[in-house]
Length: 296
Image (tube, rainbow, N blue to C red; front, side):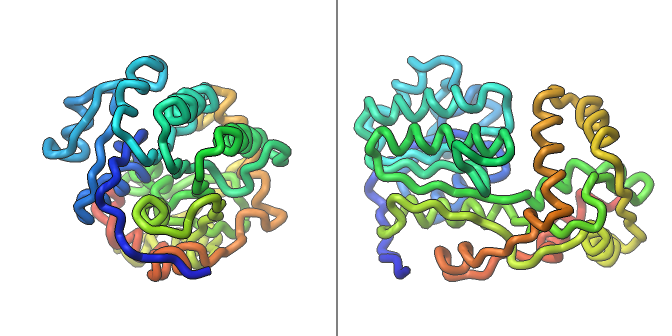
């Protein structure tokens, strides 16, 4: 498939979820391209600290539909991403329905790899439900379907700095970790170029790595030995709950981790390069870019 890489800079884009791993990079790239956009954020001052005071920020909340409707005024394209959340289906639904009422012409939405109403894991079914809702609106769409983020490793920055260890229930499974910056690049291409309408893009990194291989790369970059500690799913669940994740979401994460031994997390797709013209970042590149987070 070939894409028309002529930039569309005159259509107002609303970014929802613009302060997270993917969304903040979407904001940066849109700003770099000189595209007209605005950001919906729950706390305007905190968002400004994250994305910069020069970005137009509309204060609103997906739990307050009237604020989302107001933010949609004059918007032609929507970028939508939400964090893992117990209410993420209804949160996305609020934005989708507001976009429909506002006459938005294109929705670019981040879901997850394997998203489908009949997916074998519950989070996949949640994402699939929102995808079907978008399709039912008749609005052209692009679904970004990423796998595990490299940035998730930042959750282990403290134990890596402290005792040189990180903990996951993946055994020797391989995972095609993807950099959130590459997910954002695919999303921005979909927002600013023709040819991405009504497409679902599974997004992975360019290689599948075991956690021992991840530990080896981190050791090289950080300059000290980093060890991967394999833990049982139940121990991983208790660790996530102790870190503040609701039990239901910890169970959903464990459903994903449990896919690893059968190779379901190791698929490598060429979506990033096909869409952006650039190869995806390697885990080594990610580790080098974020090295300060892992060093004492």
